[in-house]
Image (cartoon, rainbow, N blue to C red; front, side, top):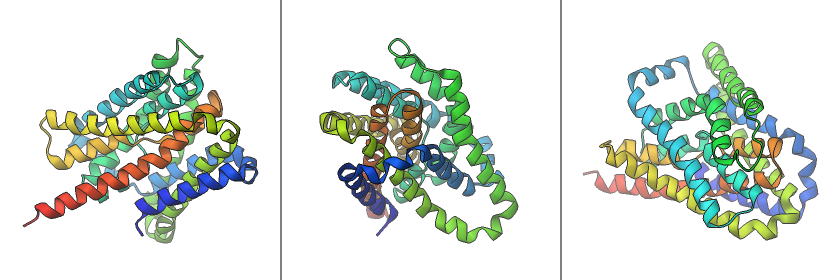
Length: 304
């Protein structure tokens, strides 16, 4: 069974387990930032300094992907949340998801969808670097009238829990890459376990309120993700980019680092604000699997 199918199934099982037995995971609440750090370290471990030359070779396309990502998703999140009349905590969580950078899962889905994997990785890397400034700033722009957004503190926190682990992974891979083959094989599994634990912990913490918010959150997360995928794909088409790049940009726009959104929501706002990020983590992998399957079959059918 492929990782894109195994992960959503595992995430659903962890969600159900944490809902019915919340006491199992609540004691691990303080490990949310560490789990996210593991994810980001794994991302860095798959990169080499040579990969960053890709940015210099294709700056325009990478910039298009990053701009569309940060332009569409926070706006879609805010609009959909307003349309479904989400309460303030859930609105915060949904906007945070939209304001976060691309996630590791998008690179896997891009590969399965016959997209441009190198481009996907570079958009994820560049958006992660820019997220130190853009994620807090966009959150403030959309929510600053309603809640206090600690922009400076969020910037420092994002730097510590995302950029430092990525940099550590890149450095380790550069100097010890040949000796880390076993670790590289194991880390994708560790990353899946880490994100499932993040989902489970948030579900356990919000279990008393989840029955009141489940349907609105599912609906808004569904539309945020789907509209992001559609907006990314057709914007790239309108700009005259080829099919492979259009698929890549669609995936990068529609799939975000919801684990980061969960940690920021819990640390700076409320546990309920972390719920949209946890739900998004499950759903965007399911939708990504479906989109990848469709595009892979389409590519196979087009071959002579």
